[in-house]
Image 1 (cartoon, rainbow, N blue to C red):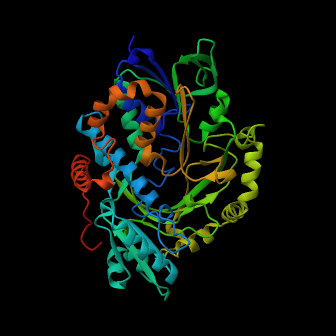
Image 2: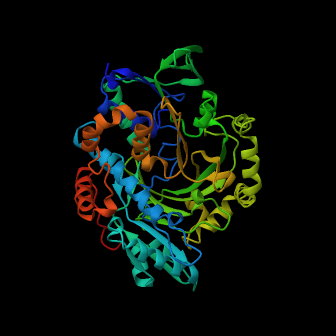
Image 3: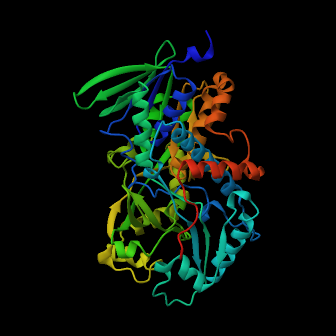
Length: 499
């Protein structure tokens, strides 16, 4: 019996972008495998993947300053930015493959070109941005990035941000036209629609209650059919837990050693949204600033043009908040329930270390809408309260684990946890998350399907032409692939005149 025949039953928990990506890739690589999906809500992409629950930034480190930290000697470290950009290129290639091979259609319904910009104020920050620009300009991945401190040029790039600005503070910005706005909710639904056609069993309104190893080595998944209020049991050789903030409690139920000494810290978010066409038309970019002292990287302020249901709107935020829920539709007991004997000291250590974060979150929770609009005025001096509404964004759970940086270290990123035997994997954490889903799945293939991945390689290279190759070290290949995916995804990577 060959490797492909050995593992035939796969269960994906959560119908978000992560499960959609894994399911779509597996169906290409092992079409005869049996895949079941369980989702407690009534449709796909309704939690963290929903377009209103995330910023929709195709995270490629083009504008996010937290991916380029300044070193004590004043230099700017771009290693993480290059890594994140490379990971996003993998996603772009896979989406392009799906469109080209008619697995999904109408790419403009889920991805649009939009300039990605960074904007800073104050002499020190301007110096930092200039150093960042110079460092990134050495990489082919960031070709075409522009930098300016010229007020006339800034008025061209960001007219709404410059309108009515009286501050004498130094101001600088970078702009790159190859950025994207991604509707991950729409993309998730498209992928699951195709999977359904491929005989993947979709089970909505089904909540996973427990995951246990059976005596035969299979995983037994206990599921509650919420519509008929009955309990079902399903077994699988491989289980993927892709339930967003709900992944940690389910991972803990598996009892695998890798699930020990991991905690989660929930952070909720809110955005201000403007739908006034006159204001919306004055801004065409995703503009990221610098996080305030003590703020988590996921709280970097940004003013985003969004394309949702073919309608253009503006979002500003995020404003962080605190809720003990691990999901927007979760329970107030989620945080307390996640504290176990094996992670209590990890959690306590994080609590002691993260006092500035706790203080920041308390301050954010207490903000009135008037205070939020005051923060918005740092970006848009002419902003009026009546033009902006509050949208509650998705719930994120930051991973807490023991690392070489000490006990109870808060991780601001995406973490893949796999069992030693590769029979179960979970995806934890937050940004860059959805943007780097394809990279996360390739990591899972290496760890969970080591016997198969060699045989899958030709097909993986068909789906992701740069697989196994560093694009940052192969500029010509990057140019070729980037142009090809832009054409397939119908991306117009040139800014409109006057922007």
